[in-house]
Length: 441
Image (cartoon, rainbow, N blue to C red; front, side):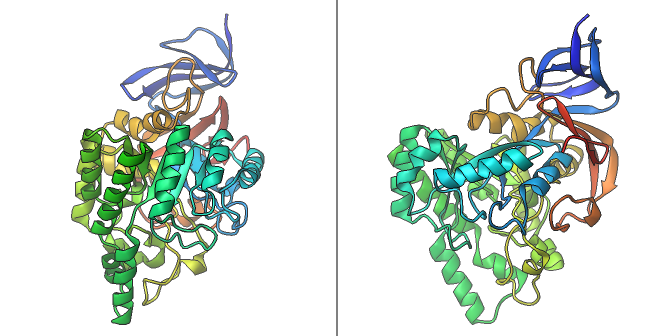
């Protein structure tokens, strides 16, 4: 009789292709057998009867800010939040850490801290800034998942935006090593001019802030990015697209043969300008939230398979930095949402708009693993890493501040009722989160 480390029995196994009932046997951190009624013994067994067993999700866009701004968020609190939300791997952005991850030395610091503190699997973006074009190859050789650039100001003094020359030269280097450039795509000229005009006229409401960062500013930047991708052969990834209109431009480029992918975020699929007005700085981000019609159109793009992946863009800050009174141009922009992405996709997608569970797996596990070269992750299959989330789709809950594992327990999702609750999260074959408690952290 075979001995296993863990057997998950009687679960409804969700892959990118199907949902089927069965058992999963795990040994040495790997899935070694998937079948009905596996014969064997295990150190631990989980009865998942009536529950859904997902591959561990991959969040491609988080800001854990360590080292340097750990008072905003940290690797331990950030990774625990992900685990509580069924996420087993993440890609940490090069900012708002200080120093940012723009050279090997700073990457090594980030790796060391993550090895010590992360509850789930860490991966790292390298930055592209005007000062580090000669460091890109070394960063790639030392394992960054890809590179990140801002076409508009990042808001962080030590992470400068990539002007057109930096973008072009950086993309040539990134193409040469076969990596991918992720870009925050908003037009600096449009956003700066519009913001200046609004502030000068004393127009500083939530809607004024949104109007200062219009969808056309994203479209202009994306079109420019595409032209540079065609000229350099660089693979590119557009982060946090807020509108189907942006996705449409990217879809056209795909049809022309450009290697371009796009993510959107849970907040663009569930929150609107009205939430920004009601919740203040907790719902401020860039690009900003849009109106309900844009939310519905973006869901159409997701349902049609035009969006490649969905991330949280978890960008936390202390409460005092998120406070907005009359001037929405003040206060830090960033959504605290890493714990709630699956909840949003289940509630707003699966239950409300008939988004198949298999599609959720594709968007938040299979595609991220495939696009960014994570071997043996992103699905449930024999030989794959045993990264798994067990979810009760029959359980609902209303999110409270005290439920959050973030360093600062606030989020625009607080007060929302979600369908589907993560019960157990398994990372590399080890149960790290179970029934609201961390077991291996």
